[in-house]
Length: 243
Length: 243
DNA sequence: ATCAGACAACTGGTGTACCAGTTGATGGAG
DNA sequence: CTCCATCAACTGGTACACCAGTTGTCTGAT
Image (spheres, rainbow over the protein chains, first blue to last red):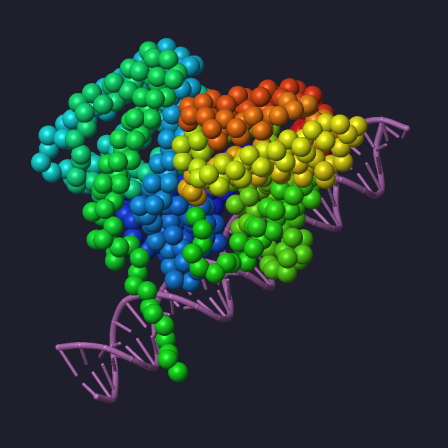
C-alpha cells in the first residue's frame, strides 16, 4: 500500500490533486488536463497520468480514453452502493469502538460530537449556507466518523472507511445549499451510545445513523438526477457519416 | 472504477498479471521485471508500470523504487488488519443475503457449500496436498464467499469484499501443505443459516466463520514469521563507507 | 436563422530513451 | 579460506515524442 521508501513524483501528484478535490477547490465536472497539471506541478505528464489512474480507481475522477478527464461526481446508484458498503464498515467500526476504545478516545469522541452538533445547528439557523462553509462542515463530519474508525488502530480498516466516506462526502458537499435539518443532538446521542453502550447497541445506533443519511441522499438524488447532467458529462456525439 | 470505454493495454496488463498471481502461477517473492513483462505481453514498459502501480495499491505486489518489484506476501499484521475489514464486510454480506437473496440464489449457495465441504473433506484425508490442488480449493472457497457477496447486487460492495478476500486467499494458498481440519459440515451449516435464518443469525454465523479463520491464520503466522522472510525480501545492505 | 459538415486544437495512451539507485557477483587483500 | 570493496548489469521512475480519437467552433449551404 504505502511506499516504504521515499515518495515519488507520482505520489506527490496524487496527494496534491486528491486534496484539491477533497477540499472542494476542484468541483465535479472540472476538466483536468494531464499536461496542464504537469506544468503546474513542474513535472512531466507521465507521473500525473499515473496519479490520475489511481484517482480513477477511487472514483474521484473519470477519464475517457482520448476525450479528457474530469472531476467526477458519483452517480446515484454508486452512492447507493457506497452506502451499502458504508453500512457494513461503519456498523463494525462502531462495534469495535464500543468494544475497545480507550477512555481518552471516548472522551475525545464525545467532545467532537458536541462540536459537530453545534456546527450543524448553527448552520440550520442560517438562511443561506455559503458553499465553502458547507464543505467545511461536511469535512468536520467526516473527521468525526474517522475518529471512530481509526480507534481500532487497523490501517487497512480505517482507510477502507475513509475511501467510502470520501466518495460520499465529496458528493454531499458538492451540493451544499440545502441542509436537511438534523436532530438537535444527533451526533451527541450517537457518541453516547458508542461510549457507554454495548457493542451491539453501538452497531445498531450507527446503522440507524447511516440509514438516515441514505434516505436523505436518495431523496436528494431525485432532484439532482435531471439537472446537472449536462454539466457533468460532455455532450455525446451520435455518429459521423451515414454513407 | 470501470473504464466505460474500450480497454487499454494497461488494463490488459493489469488483468493478466493479476490473474496470474491469483491462480498461484506466480508465487510470492517472484521478481517481476517491468521490461520482461512488457516483452512477454508485447507492449512497452509504460502500461506495465501502470498496471504494477495498480497492483501495488491492492497489496498484491511490492515495488521498491529502483530495486525491483516482487509478488508480495502480506505481512501477518496486514492479514490481521484485513481480517478486521473482512469481518465487517462479510457479516454484512451474510445479513444482506439472508434479507434479500432470491430462492435461486439460496439453492445455489447450498449446492456450492456442499461441493466445497466435499472438497475440503477429501483434502483432509490426503496425506499430502499438492500446491496446485491447494490453490484450487482456496479459489473455490473464495468463490463461495463471493457468491454470498454478489447476491446483494451492489458492485461497490462485492468488489470490496473481493479485494479483501484476494489478499487473504493469496496468503492462504501460498502455504498450502498444512490444511487444518475443518468441521465436516462447516460450510453447509453456514449456508443453512444464511438461507433459512434471520439476518442477525446469519451475520453472527458468518462472524464465527470468519473468526475461526482468523485464529487459524494467526496460529500459522507464528510458524511462518521467522522462516520465509529471507525469500520474500532481498537482503538489505547496511551502508557503504565509514570515512 | 438553422443546421450539417469539416477542421484545428487538444486529449489520454503508449513507445523510446535516459537516469539515478540497487543488487549480486567478482576479484583482490588480509 | 574469509571478507570486503568494487563494479557491471539491471531496476523502476520520469521525460519526451508521437499517435489516434474526441471536442467545440467555425463555415457554408439551405
